[in-house]
Every structure is written in structure tokens, then in C-alpha cells.
Image 1 (cartoon, rainbow, N blue to C red):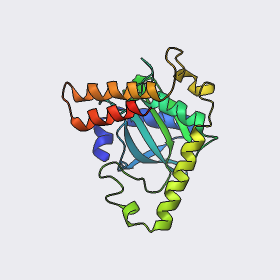
Image 2 (image 1 turned 180 degrees about the vertical axis):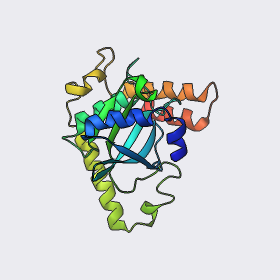
Image 3 (image 1 turned 90 degrees about the vertical axis):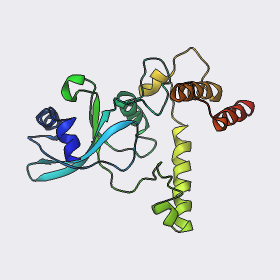
Image 4 (image 1 turned 60 degrees about the vertical axis):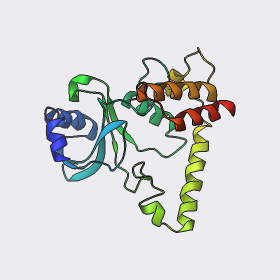
Length: 215
């Protein structure tokens, strides 16, 4: 984490300190704590910020220069922190999200758009290796697993109650194609094909055919 902080953000330490000082209420001393154990859509760094005698823990989330794991919902909309932070703000009254300290879309501060949010302590089900194959979920008793799945599905259902054509999420309504499963399948199909770069795999073809036939 310290190496990441000193290389990619080597010009950003004092800049980030000044940026945070305006939002945390005074001169800030920063210390890197490490990188989260999962996440592919941004570069993340956990750090502490000390203002006077008060120390708080936050997450710095910077747009990644690498290919994104998710397709754009509309040309030019992107999938980075600009959309992510807007989505968090739109959902904050509906589902639990980490409080956002601030968002910076000017590349001149750290070299890429970024956001800072409060750090929420806990464990996260990981993608690699799958959380069902290794880790705390595999080791948990059935009651804890049931609680996790139930609360997760409840939150997912709540997301679908949000008026996505209003407020921060209005950018998703491009007014060209009818929103729904067919459009999403088309977006993901194209994203997958671009990622495969002219390669093919039977499992993908079979899955996409099954999805199309059962829309």
C-alpha cells in the first residue's frame, strides 16, 4: 500500500492533503493502511486522516486505467467514480452505502477522477477465489449464511424500488432503447465479445443462447 501511495500517487500526497483539509475541517496528516482484498473497477487505498486529535479512516477510490469489468449503460457515460458516486448518492436513502466525503472529477488533482468515502469495517465476500469455495462464508454456520443471503436479497429488492429516471440516475435514461433484460443482455454480450477479442468458448455461447431463449 505504501509503495502504491508513493508511486501512482507520488504527486498527490500533499495535493490530497489539501483537498481533504477543505472537507475535514483542518490540516490533515495521512497514513496508508493497505488495499482492500477485492474489487476490480477502481484502484482503492485504505488510509487514516488525522485532523488535530481526531483520526478517521477512509477509502480513496481512483478510476482505474485498465479495462472495466462492466459495460457502459450509454456511450460516454463511463463506469468509473463519477457514475459510482452518483449511484451511491441516489441510493443512500434506500440501502446502506458508505458516506461519501467528496468526489473530484478533475484529472489535475491525482491524475484521474477519484472519490473519498468513509471506511466501513467488516468482511466482504470475494470474487477470487469465490466466497462459496473459501473464506468466512464457507466457514459460517447456516444461520449466518441465511442472514447474509436474506439481507442481501432484501437490499437488492430495495434498489429496484428507486425511481431511476429521476435525480442522479436520470443519466441512465438515454431514451433510445427500451430498458430491460433484452437491452442488458445485448450490452453484456457485446462487452463479453470485446473482452474475448475474437476468441470463443462454448460455455459463453451456450449461456447466451439460453438467456436469449428465456428472456
